[in-house]
Amino acid sequence: MISTSACRLEPVTAANVDAVCAIQVRPDQAHLVSPVVKSLAEAYVHGDVAWPRAIVDGDEVVGFVMAFLDIQWDPARDPADRRSGLWRLNIAAAHQGKGYGSFAVAAVVEELRRRGASRAYVTWDPGAGTPEPFYLGLGFRLTGELSGDQRVGELLLPQAPSQAPSQAPS
Image (cartoon, rainbow, N blue to C red; front, side):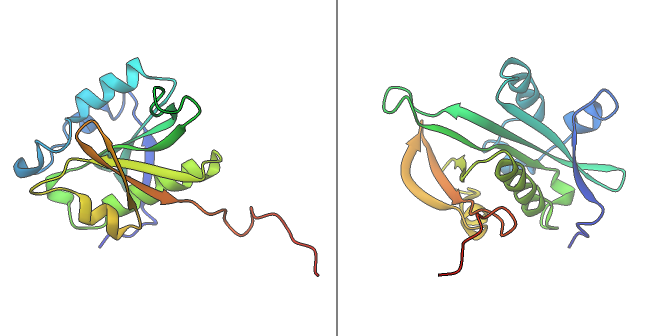
């Protein structure tokens, strides 16, 4: 397992973009997640709601994660429904199973909490090799919704104790 003290999320910059774009998941996962270069293109055209980050351990880029921030979820159903969550997660094939994915999801969740979100969302394709067990193991629960053909998971983000309103003794 990784030592999270050496792990961090960093903005994608000119200095690390080649390493970020070189991230490749296992061949059996390629149909389940878009390549990083597509995610970066989407981040560029959706710059107001995309939060792309390199997952770095020491000096090595080991993955890529991108959050979506305060998007209008389904305007036809509920124009007031705005959500934030995990848009993409790509861990390099050689670095899977070491805890980088869990680290990245936790870091995104903390960023969303810092921004005032009360829930985090993620979607995934059902079927063979799905990341569903991974997300459910991190505490996400199925909402029963679909986003296109993808299942929707939700994680409640209670306020950290230092953020909770103080209560007067009764």
